[in-house]
Amino acid sequence: MERIALNTVFGGSHQRWRHRSAVLECDMVFAVYLPPGASAAAPVPVLYWLSGLTCTDENFMQKAGALRLAAELGMAIVAPDTSPRGEGVPGDPDGAWDFGLGAGFYVNATQEPWRRHYRMHDYVVHELPDVIEAHFPVSAKRATSGHSMGGHGALVCALRHPGRYASVSAFAPIVNPSTCPWGEKAFSRYLGDDRVAWRQWDATNLIATARERLPLLIDQGDSDSFLHTQLRPALLQAAAGVADYPLTLRMQPGYDHSYYFIASFIDDHLRHHAAALKA
Amino acid sequence: MERIALNTVFGGSHQRWRHRSAVLECDMVFAVYLPPGASAAAPVPVLYWLSGLTCTDENFMQKAGALRLAAELGMAIVAPDTSPRGEGVPGDPDGAWDFGLGAGFYVNATQEPWRRHYRMHDYVVHELPDVIEAHFPVSAKRATSGHSMGGHGALVCALRHPGRYASVSAFAPIVNPSTCPWGEKAFSRYLGDDRVAWRQWDATNLIATARERLPLLIDQGDSDSFLHTQLRPALLQAAAGVADYPLTLRMQPGYDHSYYFIASFIDDHLRHHAAALKA
Image: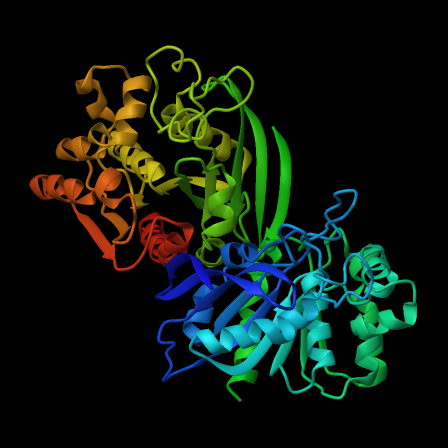
């Protein structure tokens, strides 16, 4: 592992690391924020933040305005990249921004040529937390959240792995990727044509049979240009209603899909996670 | 004037506008944040933020984490670009990042070929506030702050124009550009070889004869890689001591030159300005 950046922030430390991922078979960069006081004697819980299409580890750390309150709450934040990268990792054949590089969709691909490297689900659920918990002064108390494609990722990670996360939330998540253009493009390539197999990677399907009922907080801007075509939180809300799953969906008037929206409500999400992580 | 972006943030509004600058003889883009409740009936004061080398109007708005408290304090923030831009505007002949485009140094150039467009001082002190005060629900109460080259800019604007700003502060400013490599390169080209003329654009010189004593807050990271070569706040501190000018210089242990440093202390600066703007 090689540290490639180090910044003091709000009395804590923002660090970027490059490491070899065995799961993804490539080098990966992640960012970690450690709040002041984190030490082996006083390990802190970790929020795993999953970013959206085209992002890297940097977007959330630079733009979300999350580190002020994370420092105060004593919470670490880890931000992985959004896909495998580097030599030999295939991208979209047409160079599109919504598939391939920067668009791993947090699934384990089963189809060629994607299945060798595109195993972001196993990376963010297992390999990365193992690395974090081995090398940094953190506890095994984990929370997850994310934005858009990363909101989808956070929901699916929590719903598929009961007991692994203390809390979950999302900003403008793709709640039903099986039936929206971004998801159909990605899933048909990563997972193949069998749409039944897609359901294991779709929060709206998974919530129907959820074995754990972590209170779920979702914020969604009503001026988000992707709301009606790609995101459609009402579908998850309906499924949660049928399953009696505790979902708080807040429609935020005037807000769009940008990090300005995330910054405006990140404090509420951090407090939502802190309450569960400290319980 | 053409609005090119609009985002709801913390209940207020982040906007980007393109307008024709008569002073700079080119089109310019600026950003403005209007806090919730700003209206013609309830105009708000304005903080003019001047950014550093290579920045545009976007860096501060996206990365400083300032809008949360600006919303709460009822303060508008305006962020101009850092140089003239566009067709016909000359840049550094070698394509360097520390002169020309993105590096206007907030002076009025007197030398060819710079003097036609590079008049950033007049732009940020006069033309831009005129535009802002004519088109947005703001008062004529102004404050200024900035980072690095923009910290130099904020200090020089305030020191040269008594009565125009209610308050001033800076992050890691170039306090004595006449005697550091960045400043010497820029001033020799924009202002020519007469080093006496440079003193009118140098905070450490200007503070000696300051006619107004606005309390000046400066934060400086002690792990800033430019501290000893380019920034050297001790020079301003010494001049302020001689002149009995009220300067609070805070050396921040472990902090570097990045926006992570700015984000960590921006709230203190906003409160410093709010106290003066509301007095």
